[in-house]
Length: 289
Image (tube, rainbow, N blue to C red; front, side, top):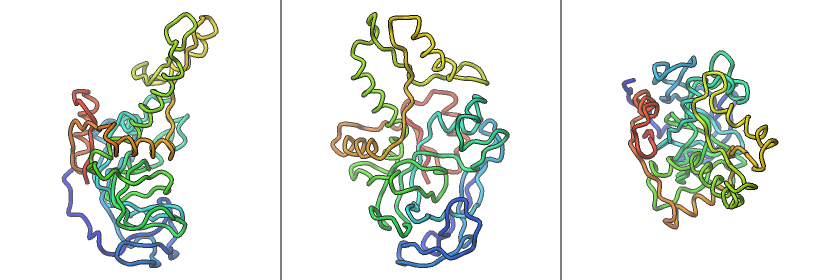
């Protein structure tokens, strides 16, 4: 996965939705250009792609069309993208149950060829309905396909990057931050946990085989609750703008500090994924672009 020279980021940008096939002009505000109608297929970018499920060997660095923001979307020049266990599940398609319960995944092969959820970068262009951001703004949040030079997301999936954080630190936060924040809230509501009438909250769950994985333990919880005095429940974190703003405020105030274990360039995502699998890295693995 040796990286090729990246395309000129200061020139024309493909401005269509990520799945678009039309060549009709789309109007957007672009960095250095203002409102400008452009069409799909005008520019390419490098991204980490896969055309089948499997180990890190299925990942390749390739040139693909740049995404284009729709009316309420923001196009980012990606500076960093966090890597977490969810990316491994998407790459491998394991456990098999995830291919059924996650609509974005395909049964036999991935519907989306590009991995990545956590993102931090600079706004390159905005759709005509975007009101909170403009080109040049530094942002962080979550999106699809962040292991690439450019990525797009609805504006309500992004927030201003805390000024006291690097892009790498900001990219380490969103998905894992949602899980941690929401788990703490659940714990606060479950202070009687482990007492005879308390609540046991199950967070995460790897292992369990190729078919069910950690889902099996979570599915057993509500069933077992019927036969005990305790309440057993699972924690399924959800991405949302309110919690993203809360995380941003905690980061800005210095009450939350991301810990980065190691960074890898975009062309070394295979190695990064293998490091994640090995489980020897302390802190978050981050991809730099």
